[in-house]
Amino acid sequence: QVQLVQSGAEVKKPGASVKVSCKASGYSFTGYYMHWVRQAPGQGLEWMGWINPNSGGTSSAQNFQGRLTMTRDTSISTAYMELSRLRSDDTAVYYCARITCDSASCYMDVWGRGTTVTVSS
Amino acid sequence: EIVLTQSPGTLSLSPGERATLSCRASQSVSSSYLAWYQQKPGQAPRLLIFGASSRATGIPDRFSGSGSGTDFTLTISRLEPEDFAVYYCQQYGSSSWTFGQGTKVEIK
Image (cartoon, rainbow over all chains, first blue to last red; front, side):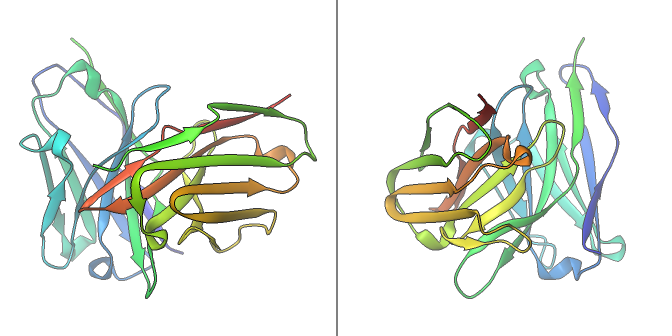
């Protein structure tokens, strides 16, 4: 079945970087953009950016430009999200989500279960 | 950036009642790129509605979406116990995706 499996929880110190992986299965990895969304404790959803697994092209939300790097390894159908210069307010659950676009619309139809990143000294 | 404002923040209803959730955009949004998601505690969001009014695969027909321009609505015709959750609207426009802040539907 179609699924996205994310890497495990991380604890990082302020100023460090974190890299989260998202392994896709059950569909053609290069056929769908992958997005990253985060959710701080008790808060709503925040879009971070996307990667085109086919070309490697990326686009980031303005809030994350300069700190967010998205990459992929097509040989293992895995997308990566790396956030640098971590701060305490980066503590959140980070989700990967597949975007499906048909002739009329685009939507996030498959989500990973999330990776908890805790930033604490 | 387009800002989505959801109301109310919390909706207290009983099973069997009708829920009407609102999502208002700061500027006109293409209906093609307006979606609704449901999120339960400890779970990832789940796609309910895309293209403003199309139900995702496996979503019961008690869920319906409507609206255009700047005003969109998610309606749950008769609340089932499993429908008590947080609901988010989402849009894509100007190379950016944004979410509303969410509406919590709680048991009264």
